[in-house]
Structures are given as structure tokens and as C-alpha cells.
Amino acid sequence: MFQSFETLSDPTLAAPRVAALRDELRRRGLAAYIVPRADEHQAEYVPASAERLKWLTGFSGSAGTAVVTLNAAAVFVDGRYTVQARHELDTKVFEIAPIAKIRVEDWIPEHLKPGAKVGFDPRLFTIGQIERLEARFKPDGLKLVAVAQNLVDKLWGKERPPQPAGLVIPHPQEFAGTPAADKVAEVQKVLAKNGQDAVVLTGLESIAWLLNARGSDVAHNPVFDAYAIVPKRGKVELFIAPEKLDKAARDHLRSVAKWLPPEALAERLAELKAEHKRVRLDPNSASWFFAQKLGGARRIARGADPCIAMKAVKNSTEIAGMRSAHERDGVAVSRFLCWLDREADSGKVDEITAAERLEGFRRDTNLLREISFDTIAGSGPNGAIVHYRVNTATNRKLQPGELFLVDSGAQYQDGTTDITRTVAIGKPSPEMIERFTLVLKGNIAVATARFPVGARGRDLDPLARRALWAAGLDYDHGTGHGVGSFLSVHEGPCSIARVEGVPLEPGMILSNEPGYYKEGAYGIRIENLLLVREPEKIAGGEREMLSFETLTLAPIDRRLIDKNLLTADELGWLNAYHERVRKALSAKLDGETKAWLAASTAPL
Image (cartoon, rainbow, N blue to C red):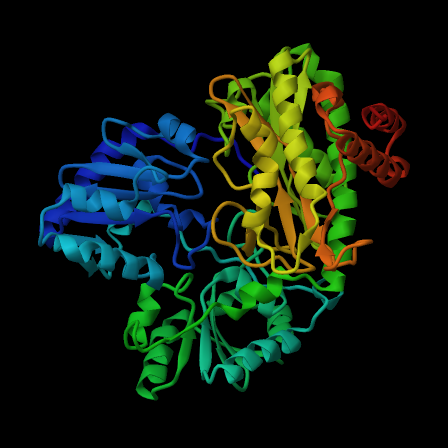
């Protein structure tokens, strides 16, 4: 199994660990310390050695921040994690602070006196984050202090897991589509255009994409631990542990990169500073540590990591690969849903069993490299926890009259998948059917949207919510995120959300996942992946419009749909989608699953 089900969180450990951290603060003359979820690469998914927030607090979500003062402590979470935080945190130790109501930079001044010093690890905060904190703290007389030794690591001691040491794996041209040399040349064109001498790459996905290489250092994410400097001319300088490069990796990288040990990075940054080079850093992804090593935030050349925008637009090879991956994945998911329909009513199937069977069906493809994230398999009230992770303590059986939400994905060498289906176990209630149909209407609204060149995800987000809003309902997460090509299942810079986003471009791949969650009862989410198509003229129109192709191929539970709530166009889309699913998958299925698929995709 690529996923384990042991209990990751123990709230009872938080009190003594926070007490030890406070002792350390007193010794250092600090009034507070900030512990983010991020690692040194500002990644959403991190290796075990970087799970500092979980070790200190017990909170295991993929986003969050803890602040510990001498007299108070809080964990800040977004809307995806408010329910989970209540399950995992000792609320006698930590206040749960929803960031929609209060942010770190506002909470800290409320709990400290003027002149107080706030400690932080400069490797774990971006340039932009520290500058915003400094600006916010200045009127209150608070001072940020960079602490070279991470205080959580010090307390964690010898029990802290070792740094990951997986090998670098070449990503063949047949899957990458564009040679690494061409990608490096494009980055160097950006540097030349902006009069910059080099760019420091700190994001693992950017380095993997640029060099057409993959790894296994972070669970479910095919990346390897490294940093890179791309000069305006010449080879990429890759800072990586030498034992991570075998002969195949060295042969693959030799034409575009030279490698140096990680300990050489600080010296190289000092050289660039001494030579007065204009070094580009992304203030939203590069850590404060790099800015300081290069002479301070005022001396760096600010600019986005150029790889982020480039890798978001998939080339024709990657698009073809994603289509193949989704067809393959659709077969596995359909086999799982058929099995689930046959077995779930027995009352013997639990969440862990379901997650194991789903991974098993994906393994049967013989092409599964990893799952793309821990499967979210939430029955009944567990489905209302947006990023629920089943473990042996929370595992429950699927029961008649409940909903089962399963959000899962796969990493294939030709593409990354992410799909959510909500399934009725037994007979659903009228309320479940109504709210599922409202969520479906939002999914269809995004899938069928036509939008002008330059439109952003925030322009589409209200389409997904309109039917829910009309019923006085909503959900507290974004509608969609970018997806990598055999890379991270969550990829920037594109999204479909209320927040600021970038213009959507042909070749971008995003999720479409509106939902509804009734705490203590059930959760609903319907998720497909979408490819942004080239703009087309519309008969009688004046401007070309972009649109989406739905990549995901799997039935949507007809038992949960009230067709009377759908418009004729919505019903037409659903029936056409199900016909496409049936035609694409039937020939690849066994007899039982083929018959099940025919019934599950029959026109409404």
C-alpha cells in the first residue's frame, strides 16, 4: 500500500511539548515562536522530517500555522480544516483560529507587549511572508528575530526522522514532451529579458519539471530534495546529496546540469552576492534565508519562479498522456464503484477496506507509480471533514442510509489524476438528493462555461456556487486547483477560487470540485479534472471564447440526482457525459463491471 492507516495525531503529547518550547523561548529571550506547516521548499506536501507542526500540535492537515507565546498558543487553519482541527488538537493548549476570522499577524500583537521578540526559522518563511509580518508588527513595536536553529527540531531531537534519500529518476522524453535543454533555454530567455544574471529555484516541482527528472522523497509526489541555480548562460547548478544520483541520473543530467553538494549552496550564494550579480528570487516561494544570504530583500531581483507558469501549460505530449491516464484511471475507478455497489449494503465494508480496494484496482493497471494523495474515504459524518484521512481510530463501516465520499488520485508516468465521487449507500434521504443535485449543477456550470481570454479562476468560481447560494448553502474551500503532469496533484499558479488568480490559458489543467458539508451528518463533493481548450469563435459572437474539456471518466451516482432540479441543458450535459464514459471504458471492463457501467450511465 502507498497509504498507511495508523493514527498520526496524539493530542495528549502537545502540552509537554509546548511547555518545553516555552522553556526554550525563555532561555532565548523570545516572547513567541511561529511554526508553519511549510518545509524549506515551501511545499504543501512535506517529508516526515519536516512535519514540525504535527509533532508540536498534533494537527496533521496540509496547511496551518501555530504560534506559541509564553502564555497562549493558537493554531491557524482555513475552512478545509476547522472540523479536523477540533478532532486533532488539545483545545486546553491551543486555540483554534480560523483564518477567515483572524490571521497570525493580527493575533500576535493582541497577545504580546511592545518590544517583544517573535522568533522564526528563516528557511520556513517566504520573503513576502516576513515582509508582511514586519510591516504589521512595526506599529505595535514587535520585532521579528530569525533563529538559525529550528527550535522544534531541537526539541524533536534524535526521534526526528532522517532527511529523505531517494534516487533521482529520469523522466523520459516520451512523457515530458519537451527536452530539458529547451526548458532551460526558455528560463534563460526570461533572465535575459529582465537583465538578471541567475534565478534560484527552491520549489521541488520546478526543479523536477525543468530537468525532466522525478524522485520519491515526498510521499505521493514524485520529486527529489534539491535546490538549483539557473545562470543566464551555461548549465544549471544542482545542489543535491551525491548519493541521490546513480549512473542513470548522472547520464541524464550531464548535458544540462552540474551537481554540487548541498553544503556548497551557502558559499555559492555568497559568491553571487560578492560579485554583485542580479539574482532573481520569487518572494512568494523563496525563503527569507535566501534573501539574507544574497544581501537582503532590497538587493534581490524580484520575480516569479519562471518554471511555475511554464509547467502549468501542458504541451501536446503531456495532454495526450493525461487523457490516457484518465481513461486508465476511469477503468480502475469504475471497477471500484461496481465492487462498492455490490458489497456496501452488506454492512461489512469499512473506510479502510474501501481505500485498500481502490488502490488495488489502480495497481491492477500495472502502471501505477504512486497514489497522488492519501485517499479521502469518508462515510457518513466523516465525509463532512473536507480533508479527512481515515485511520484505525476513526475507521467506520459504510451504513445504509448514509453517503460515502471518496476523493482519490493516482500518479502514472503519463499523468496525474484526482477524482471525487459521492455514493449513496442504501436509500438516500430527500435532503441528500437535493443537495447533491445542487452541487452537480455547480459542477456542470463550470464544465460548460465559455469565458474570454484573460478570464481568471475567480471569475468562474461563482458559477459553481450559484445553485447552492440560492438555497442558502455554500462550501469553505476553493472550487478548483491546478494539477501537475506526473507531479504535484496541487499545482499553481492557476485555480478556480475566490482569491486572486492568474488568467487561464489553453493547456492548463484544473480540478472542478464544488461540494457541500453538513457537519456530523455527511459530505458531498463531485470532482472532475478539466483541460482549458484553445479559444474558439461562437456563431454570432464577437470574441473568441475559451472552454473546458472534461478529462475524468467515471459515472456520477444517478441515485442522488433529482432530474427535476436540472435544466434541459444540464440534463443534456450529464447524459452526454455518461455516454462518453460508457463508450470510452466499456471495452476495457469485465462482464460484470461492463453491465454495471451500462446501468450507471443510462440516460436520465
